[in-house]
Length: 121
Image (tube, rainbow, N blue to C red):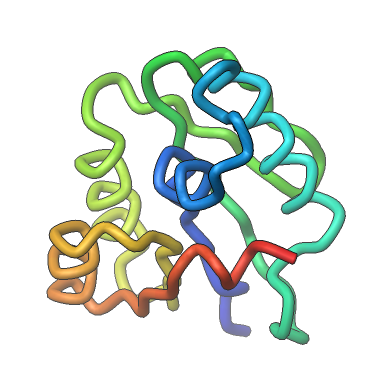
C-alpha cells in the first residue's frame, strides 16, 4: 500500500502571498491557514493526504490539529522543508511555496511543487 501524499506547506510564503494584514499577527495568520487546511485538505486532490505546515519566527508555537501537523522550524523554514522531503524518501511529496530557491532545492530531491493558490480558496 502506498503512503498518502505528503503535502508540505511553507506557512510564511503562503500567508505572505495575500495582503490581508497578516504582518500584524503572524501567529494568528498561521493559525488561520492551519485551520483552513484542516477543513479543506488539498483542494482538487481526491486521495488521502498528510499535511505538514512548516512555521518559523513569530508563528512558532502554533499547535497541530487533527488533519494538520505543525512543524516549527528550529532555524530556516526552507531548510526544514528540504529535510522533510529528504526524510520522506520515495514517498510522494508536494511542497506548496512560491519561493524559487526552495522550489529548486526540493524538485532536485524529487518533490513536486505548487504555488500558494493551491491552498487558497
